[in-house]
Length: 52
Image (cartoon, rainbow, N blue to C red):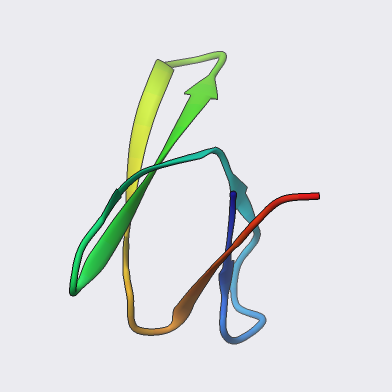
């Protein structure tokens, strides 16, 4: 999955969809510096799309 902002303000975050709720969703991803991360996004102003 990839997360994209609805405007062009920031970059794309790619990973596995780990949680999805009414007001937010979370993406699990790997980082060289911090190993496994859970990145949370508000539903407002962000889109989740299937990668590829």
